[in-house]
Every structure is written in C-alpha cells, then in structure tokens.
Image (cartoon, rainbow, N blue to C red; front, side, top):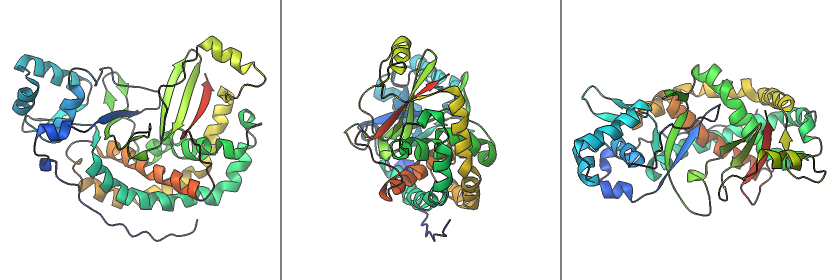
Length: 337
C-alpha cells in the first residue's frame, strides 16, 4: 500500500457543561443505533418513559433534581427509570454517587470533531482494499451466490460490509481490541445515540451501517447510509417462493457461501489490523482527550470511532470507482441460516 502522510490535528471535544439548559439538549433529535454480532438489541424500549432523554441529560451532567423537575417526576418514578437503564448496563454509578452513560452519545459538535480525524484515517485506509482488489475479485468470483452478479453490483456489500464492517468486526474485536461487546442485560451489544443531521432518510453523520431482520430461517440484511422506510416485510414462505422464481432479483447467500464470505474478509484482515495497531497511540490519545473517557469504555468508543473511519473509506472507494454508487443508498442481501 502506498504510504500516505496524514497530518492529524487532535481537537478536544467541547465540554458537556457547555449545554445551558435541558430544552437546548432535547430540541435535537437523536437516533438509536446498535452493533452486535448476533443482532442483539436492548431489552428495554429507550423510546418510552423518557429513557433516551434521561441518557442524553446524564451525558451532559444534568443533576437528578433538574431531570425530575423538567419531566415532573417524583423520586419513585425517577428511580424506576434509573433502575431500568442501570439493569440494562447503559449507565453506571460514579464514586460521587451520580449516574453517567456507558454508551456513546454523539451530538453534532462531537461528531464534527470525531470526523475531523476519522476522515483522514478513512481515506488512508482505503488503500488497503485498492492494493488487494485483484485478489478480492478473484475470491468473489468463486462464491456461488454471486455467480451471476457483476462485482460492481455487489461492491458496496463486499468492499463496505464484508471487508470492513459486519464480517470483519469479530476479527477487529478478537485481535485488536481483544474484547467483545459489553454485557447489557442478557445480551451483548454496542449502543450509540446519534444526533440526526438531515432528512431524506440519510443516516446520522452519513454513517454506513447494517439493518437486520430475521424471518424464519432467513435474515434480511440492508447495508448503506440511506434507508427508505422499514425493512421489507416478507414472510418466510414468500422468500422461499421468490428464491425458486427464475427471474427473482433477490440475492440469497446460503450458509456455505457465508463461510466463503468470511474467508474473503480475511484477505485484508492482517493489513487492517496492522494499520489499526500503528494508530493505537493516536486512538488512545483521542479517547483520553474526549468527553467519553469517564463515561464509556475505550472498546465502545473505538467501535463507534471505527464506524466513522470506514464510512470515509467507503466514500473514498466510491470516489475512485471501486464501489458503485446506488441511488437508494443501500444494498439488500438475504442470508440463509
């Protein structure tokens, strides 16, 4: 890979105390995003009972009294809400007896600072795929599920999701972080509240992410940074019949093909890990100079920072013609158990 010199300016995130009042915080819309290797989600509904709002306000260091006063909650109700969040592992108690979030909460200002460094790294990291593109296409051609699919039509799924995101994530966890998603309730997952940036069904900060929906023995996977509405509402029988239809445009990836996809991801794994390792000191410095160091763990901070990096990697690969741009902003694949 060509050596690209990156000048990184480390900016300190703005202090949470800069938020003047609760109304200023809650006037912005935040969206909940999770990352998990087994599609885990919170056991509690953060959209109910002001749970999401409480998480936001705790991030900005508002006191329990201020929160209770704003929502007109008595002690008993507030304690129930805190117990819900604590039991799910989304908040923790400090030595001072206060509660703070353990997940990531990224507003527009904090996201801008993260992007400032992550974009430079993402552009540089795109060189790993570019240097390996011949080997990647060769491995792609040997996967039966993609036999009739031109590489460019699957490029977002392969170069974006397989090589950098869902299929690569376990190697990043095992070999770089040497840890797994935090235990939350009975599940393990990373969680972030991301401030919405714009409409048009675009993801906050333009992040590329996964959406999964299990339908019997199938899993619908959408990957992209723009989604129009809910995931397709197929039944298991409908999917089964569609795959038997000669002219079906749905892409089915059988279990045997998924193993080959994982092998494809491994083509860049060591180069990717080496790149992350070379930047470990930078990542630690950024984390320790962020508002998150006393709230969430380094592993969770890094996973979401990594999402910003690979988003720019995808964009760079699109600009250079390695990933085909889709007007829909996402690509759909059906995974078979």
